[in-house]
Length: 470
Image (cartoon, rainbow, N blue to C red; front, side, top):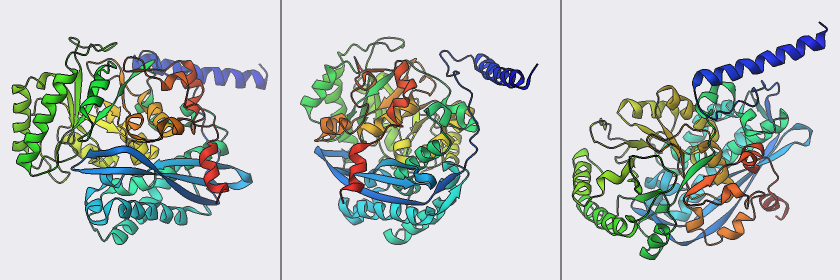
C-alpha cells in the first residue's frame, strides 16, 4: 500500500473511532460528522481595539431588586499577524453581574467601570500569544479582576463582573483563533477536552421569554397567546423580605391566571402544562423565607408548574438545597467551574450556562463539569443582541435534553425589551434565518443552522463600522 493509501486509512480509522464513541454514548442525533483537528497554531494577538454603543430598552427592565434602561453593546476588534482580524461582541449588565457596584455607582457609572476592565484586558494581551483562548482567559483573569477591585473600591467584587467585561475579548479571541487555524465550523472549534459537554445535536429547542417586575399585563397576555411552553419569571421584588414575598406571590397569581390556559406544544411531560422557570437573583436571604414562598406557591396552585428556581439565595449563603422539593439552578453564583462544583455539592441540580455573560471559554469548562456530574444545563439570556443570541443558541443546541422535557432550553428576551430590535436583527448576517423565528415556542434547528455555525464566522458590517467611522 502506498503512503497516500496509509494516510487515507489512518484518517478513516480516526473517523470510525469517533463514530464508535458516539454509539457508546447512546445519544440520539449526536454530532459526529467530523473529528476535531488539533490546531497547530497558537492564538497570536498584535493588538485589540474596543468600541461600544448604547441600545435603549422599550421600558425599564426590572430584576434583582433594580432596573435597567439601556445596555452597552461592546465590540472588540482583535488583530493578529498576516492581517487576520476578528470582531467579538459583548453586552454589559452590571446589575446582573454585581448589583452592589450598581447600587453605589448608578447604571451609567457601573457600565463605565466595567468598560474600563475591558480596556485593561486589551492592554494586557496586546503583542502576546497563547495556546488557546481558554489559556488567555486563565492567564489574564486574576490581573483584570484585581484591577476591577481597585477601581470599584470593592474588595469583594464578584467574579461575574469581570467575566462579563471579558466576553467581547474572549469571543474575538475564539474567532481569530479559528482564522489562524483555518477552522470554519463551531463543532471543529470546540477543543477535544470540552466536547463531552457539547456533544448533543437538537433539531429544536424551547424558546423561553422573560417576565420581569415591569412586564405589563398586556405583554403577559400576548405571551400567553403565543404558546410558549416555559416562561421565565423574575421574583425577588424590591422591598423588605416580607414585602418581597407578598409582592412575588401577588405577581404569580396574576401571571398564573393569564397563562394557565396555554396548551404547550412539543414538550414531553407527564401532562400538558405551562412551566414556570423562576429566577430570584439571590434575593431570598434565608432558607426559611424561601420555604414560605414555596408553601404559598402550593396554596395558589402554582407549585406543580414550577420547572425550576434559579439562584434563590445570596451567594454567601451556603446551604443544602436538596430538600426543597424543586430543581434549584445555579447561575451567577457559578462564576467558574470551581464555583459550579461547590454549588453542585450543595445540592444545586441544574446549571444555567451563559457564554454571553461569563465567556465562551468559561462556559466550556462549566459544561464539561456538569456533564461529568450528570447535572443538566440550559442557556440563560443577558438581554443580548441578535448576534449573541445565536452564540447562546449554539451552546443550547448541543446540551443534553432537560429532564422530563425532551428538548434543550434557551432563554431569550431581547426581542421583548430592545427598542430597536428589528434594526438590530439586520446587524446579524443571518438574523432573518429560519432558525431565528420561533414557532409555537420552539426554535427549529435544521441542518443549515449547524452547517453555517449560526453565521458566527461571517463578517459583522455594522460593528466593523464602529471602528472605521471614528
